[in-house]
Length: 278
Image 1: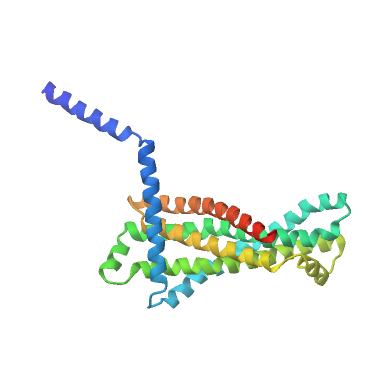
Image 2: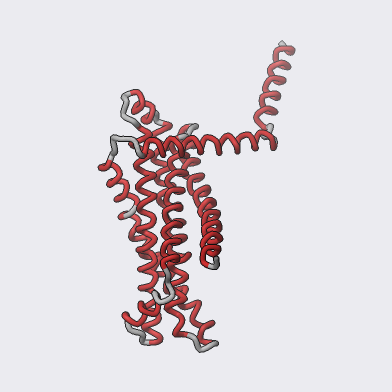
């Protein structure tokens, strides 16, 4: 009897040691590269399915409504406040040099080139990315996706392709809307202090905006939208471990999307500056 108790304690201690053992650097690197390869295969699968009929236009429109229209209140408030705050913060520096007339151009350049697509992407990464990750993750852990595969309902095309397409095309629309709302908030602040008319403000604002600025902003927005859709769908579609996996999928969708958005912002800005001064 004491021997059996001793052996039982030895087994429990060994199990505790195994559970407390942390993965080493080699294991983490293997997991990292395995995850990158899986994401690469996931993107290739999306590209193949996106151009292969039949196309679920009704579901794409519904996802555009969910991603775009339902994000308008938050984008409106954030863009409006961003325009007012940035104008208030920029005015004292321009007053010192007597260059308050440059304020519309400064705000337009900042909003169109950087703030509008970046702010929109970060908001949608938190709202849309977490929603998609949690939605697909809950369907995965409750085996709804497996049931769709058994019934030949094309779950990847219906659930993943439609959401990535919708996010890719709706983020640029929201970014342009955010830029307009931000400029509108800036105009109200400028009009309150300098009594500038609506026509004069927007004429001065778009005087320094070039097609390269608009093109760069759209490229950013498309890239951000595609990134948010891919990351959220990948994490949700591959969720595991029950309800805990659903929360993890939603959380990691937001974190990874924001990290990649900042990386893409840096790369696109460097490329656009190289083109601008080439």
